[in-house]
Image (cartoon, rainbow, N blue to C red; front, side, top):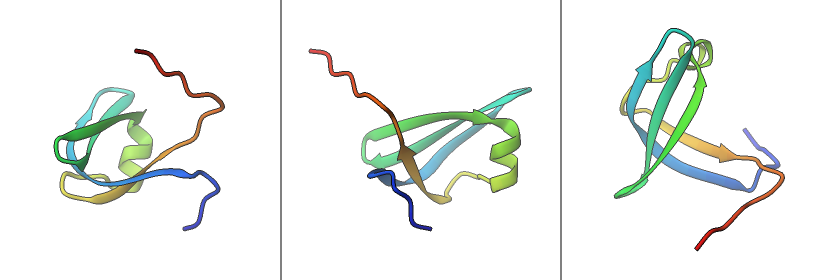
Length: 68
């Protein structure tokens, strides 16, 4: 699938925690960096996300804030 979003981070799912409505998906990008995506439980189930899956975290934002 091709997307216009340029911020795409390939990684592997290390944890799937499903709640009543939302699911936390932890993705290891390159050790030891991890991105946590909070998505709906329905979306996690539709995609069939499980630990060990190879996925791409796609970040689309209108602004980026940097703090130091």
